[in-house]
Amino acid sequence: DVKVTQSSRYLVKRTGEKVFLECVQDMDHENMFWYRQDPGLGLRLIYFSYDVKMKEKGDIPEGYSVSREKKERFSLILESASTNQTSMYLCASSLSSGQAYEQYFGPGTRLTVT
Amino acid sequence: AQKVTQAQTEISVVEKEDVTLDCVYETRDTTYYLFWYKQPPSGELVFLIRRNSFDEQNEISGRYSWNFQKSTSSFNFTITASQVVDSAVYFCALESLPYRDRDDKIIFGKGTRLHILP
Image 1 (tube, each protein chain N blue to C red):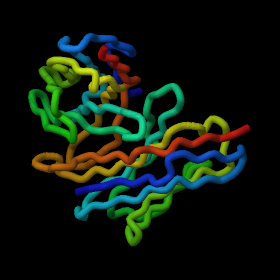
Image 2 (cartoon, rainbow over the protein chains, first blue to last red; image 1 turned 45 degrees about the vertical axis):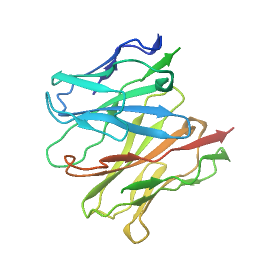
Image 3 (cartoon, one colour; image 1 turned 90 degrees about the vertical axis):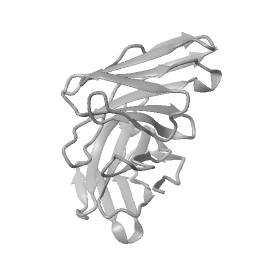
Image 4 (cartoon, one colour; image 1 turned 180 degrees about the vertical axis):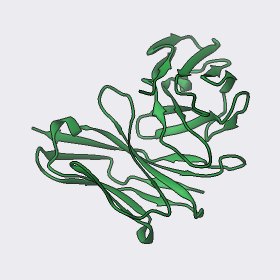
């Protein structure tokens, strides 16, 4: 079974703090993704990575950065958290090689910024 | 720009009824992939089906079936004889390749919340 794990299920941070969300997958997938999920807005892609040290902006990258130093790990960084970044954050991974394959999702991190 | 529309925000049906969830997409690409995912109350999204743009065959998996029609840009999902365990939010998604140098790579619909009433 593919496993995508996220470092925390729930996180509470203060405005201005630096926040790290970690994601690890154990299936040697090339692609990894970070989404945020908000009521009424569905899933929106923040960043994704198709290889180690490679990253591409998604639809809403502002206020976020990412890091992929190892194939299995993809980190989302909020440099200075703001209240409008309160949301559910979902990490996913998928195979690559010329096609679009299904994504495997982690359980999500519910981040509250106060 | 690519777009996925799930016009039904919320649907309630009584158990054992059939229900169809609509998904309409827009893309200028000839090669693309469509997906359905289920998000149960526990929260973790689960993959249901993947279709590429060259495969218009409908698919049936148990009580689930999918109708892909390029002529109407639709990829609808039907649950036959619904059960309470089918209660979830269902997302339709569109991906086009290659990812690089694209403005819109992976687009999810806003989801349809399905309530199956006992």
